[in-house]
Image (cartoon, rainbow, N blue to C red):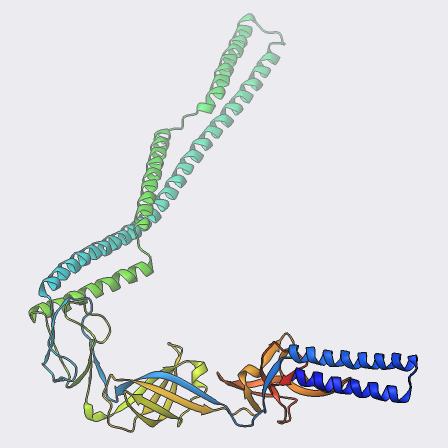
Length: 496
């Protein structure tokens, strides 16, 4: 292509030269001719370089056809009247007597436990039960001791209060007697002083010596009594009450001290008892454990009596066996049993992003080995506990058996309105989603193809296409691929 362009350029230049020579031979005309030739040459070279650097693009026209969503998941064939047989968990299994598709009825032997391990566990559970019952008895005894200690504390507190009141009464009586004696001494002292004063007054008058001696003797006697009263007054701080009140007070104080000591002992007993009492939650847990141990031991007793054999209590066909000889039984179902004439259904679990393309009545392709058929979804229910959706499908063929695994393929057309374009055509940046389309604009050397930006909003998408809305008419040529990175405003071209 570039060689043909050079030939065309040489032809144009030679034509210009001939015209210039034919019209004018002057130097100015030659200069003008050279300038024109240079401009044309530069333009051509520019276009040639652009042809080499310009990316080649691939485009598509947007479609109004809706896109499809395909959801593939596993499903399991189940019986309508499937029942589960549970056995005691945690026991070693010696032998299993039934297998899948076997018909069982009440009284059919299902499995045999290892009797030795049953007896060992029975002994172990018996020890645990004994310890739990001892612990519960200790708790009851501590509760009884606590209640008795509380009763004793209340009684002793009453006794101590009464004893304190009795002591206070004795002390008040003794004090009252002391005050009465103090008042009596003061009264007698005052009386003697008055007498002495009277006797002194008598001595001032004329009297005989015998009478003077008499009064002096009286005054001397009164002074001696005053000294006795003064000594007695000083001894009142160690006053002893009449009768045996002092002894009673000492005995009462000793009894009070004894009562206080015994009360302290009771408080220690109370603290010890309370420290050994379990909380309500622990008591409930312990009682539950005791009941569980008793129930477990009863189960083991029945199994040992039956030589470790477990028998069926229902009739039907074994669908699945979920335990194995040599292993331990679990709390989950050991056997699944059903009546084969009850019919089957297909069960599948779906997440929220999957179930939005599935609804009741949806058709689904059910694939089993080399066979497949179209079936219908009969119900969709949300399991809150598991946070999944349960899908039930009604099979239409007769090639299914309980426990089979099948592959499910759901196909749903999008309900979103807009234009369908290949997913690789959609781009995005901080301003949002957009596409690039082919735009024609005029340049110095003619019309050129450039990439134009068109903002879009993605309404729906799958792995290959997207439904978008925006400034589209349906006639645009949308860029889906290029030999080099393309940005809005870049020159582009189609492959030749």
